[in-house]
Length: 247
Image (cartoon, rainbow, N blue to C red; front, side, top):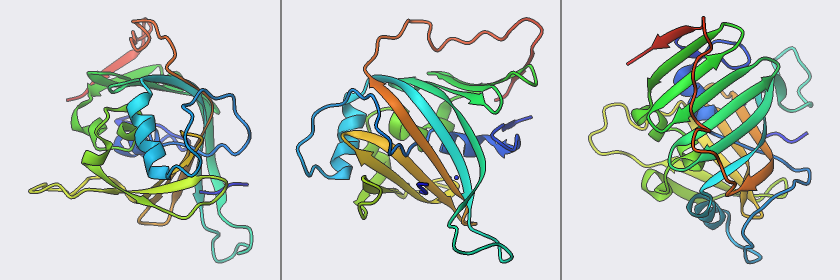
């Protein structure tokens, strides 16, 4: 197995803070199995950092499937030779359109949608029959979601550092740049962010927090620059749903 992790946004344990969901959800990927892909032809030996830059520059829209896992190291009373343990897993579909529009549609084990329409971030929880709206603003711009779904200023926010090749991918470490006079630094909850690139596509994103928790989201069946209807990112809550609007 490849290892690389109400206003809270709800992930597998239904109680993960909003900013962490953005950092995860948009943070993304390890797909080692073969995929049906549409990607630019890159010269053999192209660095992972350059592949990532080209993906951000050249992908205007995309859709595909994801599997997201949260992993942890074995506890003291557990076997130590099994590697990281999967404690939660979700899966579904995603679609995005630059700049800043995306849908992260969790389908299993429960149904939720995170929608960014360019102005708002909307969380729809089918089980709760609840929709939460809040301005996109800086909350989106400073998260790993912006790496893949946002604008094209990747090098403006991160230093890209080549890492060791593994699992058939070229890995790139993303170090958030220090923002002068910023009150809270980069405000990301992760101590390490790494992207695995293969054939011009981000196939894995590994996120590690200060407690050693690991989040891994894998993408598959990616199609680039697909035609999307004008209303693809419009969301209207169903009749009778609870609607929360947060500033």
